[in-house]
Length: 388
Image (cartoon, one colour):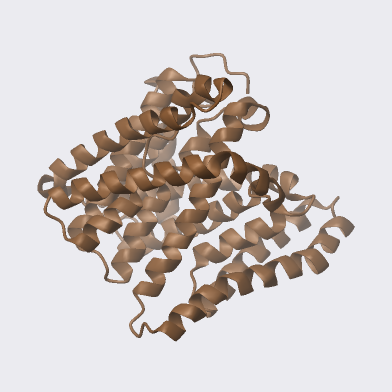
């Protein structure tokens, strides 16, 4: 096989990404579309250039670990309290509505109640990666639009983490009340451990050697992987552990610097993550599921901008940005793919339902990123002046 080892696979992925990204920018398309398309073309269901399923899963998994760690770095619990007051009602009400839409379409398409419920759960979330990637830095850090989008995405991320915990617990072979209690107790215990270590050890080390950037970077990576591994030892997942590790560091003064420092690493893993999403899509299954995929994609991409706009009519300031918020968040999420993967590993979902979630996520990513880049200012646009 062409891509039979890690080094060869990464070389092929990034060589292909450079070529297809050039084509995407020249044709004014989103880079996210390019990376997903590359995965479809080069993956095991395409031309089999990178054909090792386990290797692709590992590449996507490692990418998700670091991306969730970076998402956690932006989640300062002190700021979350004020954000919750502004966005919790909007986020919870719209998430329930999106889940209901997903369930109804799946159920009417002939899926079982469990499959329909999982498809509905996967449709609750919008993409944190896509939402933030396509938002200019000026709007992200100093504009009310950025504040609203970040608030909604942060609450959705928390809901997604809770959903993944429930799925992992439900799929346990020897599920009992005591095991369920153990898993849910593991989360606060891991949080306490992470915040304790950060407060009394990491924060002091970071302050002592804050001028040595290489040390800050290495220590942060080590911290991320350590907490991720501890999470697996206590019955959780690497992804949840990495997220908690990032949130713990977000409480410190060094978090802003680390977010900037990790930006190149984020971009590196973004390519791998979106490539893995495309590569995992079984395009030969699409003829059997194209109807629910198309209907679900259209329903979600119509419902999300509309419901976000309607939910943000509470004040004149939010009414002005409501539609743009909805369009920027009008897609499924990387967490939707994780829901499908975790549910599949736990044998809770049928292969057809998992394929519907993956295909809907990819299709919504492609349409949404094109819609946003053609309608609003984004860092990726080379034909517009962006105050970035």
